[in-house]
Structures are given as structure tokens and as C-alpha cells.
Image 1 (cartoon, rainbow over the protein chains, first blue to last red):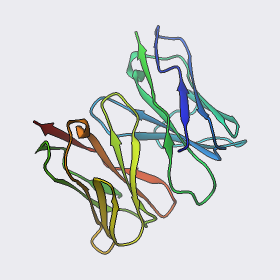
Image 2 (cartoon, rainbow over the protein chains, first blue to last red; image 1 turned 30 degrees about the vertical axis):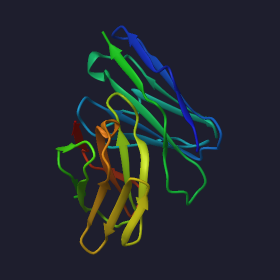
Image 3 (cartoon, rainbow over the protein chains, first blue to last red; image 1 turned 60 degrees about the horizontal axis):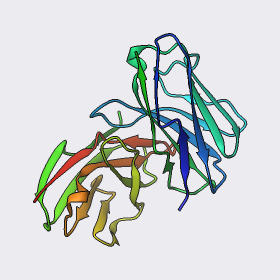
Image 4 (tube, rainbow over the protein chains, first blue to last red; image 1 turned 180 degrees about the vertical axis):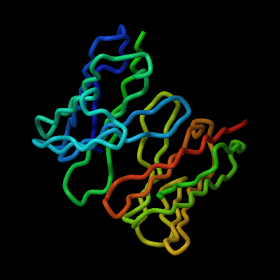
Length: 116
Length: 109
């Protein structure tokens, strides 16, 4: 099956700093990547959808200037949480979709962010 | 609005069978997914239904009725490792996944 990796798997940072999370599709080309956030005991919340080479589409209520998404290649997307605050502490998960018409999203293992 | 309903929590016994229901109201329908998510981990794909009927895959089966806006995930011969949250998600007319809140399944010996 298709494999998606995320790095780092966990990160602790001070308030006000920026954190970059990488999402890579290891054995397929991801035309579309999705970024989710999940707070404890809650469902996945889609933050944004990114297609390679174009700007990400952000969900309502998600600040695009705070959560910078770059999908520079067909195998890599990055999410940068700028000026992180404790309320940004969450589990961030990316998923990737390959060929158009393919239904399954393949999820990365997630990144747990803790902002002190 | 779009809505996906599933029970918050269910408890079952090891070796038994459990059915997790999901009802949905979405703008359009382009398929329904079930994912398994263990605590602290990302979801893993279980099944995909786009036509009415039952899809069987080993110990897990998923059923869909589009006219009723209803699906269920059936887990047989429950094992302790099946303790997890089970997420129902529907792809709407814009091909966007709408997620349910998940059902936490607790397996007891």
C-alpha cells in the first residue's frame, strides 16, 4: 500500500516560535495533500487542501497567514505553524491522494505539537 | 447543513460481533469511508462503499444504503486490538470528505 510519512512525529516549542511539519508520499505521487488537526477526543478537522504547484485552499476559520502550506512537489507538502501559541497544541495529520479518481486518502502517522 | 452521526462509544466482548452505525445528511454523495484510529495514531483505511450493499473484507464488513443515508461497519470475532475509534466519512458533491466524530469501541475480555 501507499506510504505517507510525517516529520517530526512530535515537537515541543516555546510560544511565539514557528514550527514546520513535513509530509511526504514515499512510494507514489500525491496530486493532492490534506492537512488535518485533531484535538483530544475530537474528530479530524480539515484545515486545508493543497494541490501540487498551486495555493492551498483553506477551510473556513483557518488562518492562512498562521498556517502556511507549501506543496512544492508531488511528494512533499509542508505545514508551518507561525508564531505558535499554546492553543495551537494539537495532533496534526496529513493525508495524500494519488491519481485523480482514486478514492482513498493515505494518512501520515501524525505530528503531536505541544506549545509551552 | 452537512451532518454525520455515529454513536459516541460502544462496548463489546472479545470474540463477539459489533455493529457500528453511521447516518449522514450531505450535499451529494460520492462514497462513504470507514477508518480505524487507535489512540494517538493517524487513521487507517478500512473500507469504501459507493454502491448499495455489503462489502466484506475479512473480519470487517461495511454496508451502505444510499436511499436511507445509512451505513454500518460490522466487526466479527472481536479481538482486544480492535479497541479503537471508528470514523465514518462521506465524500460530498464537491468530493470533500465530511467526517463523523467517531465511535470509541471498547473491547472487554
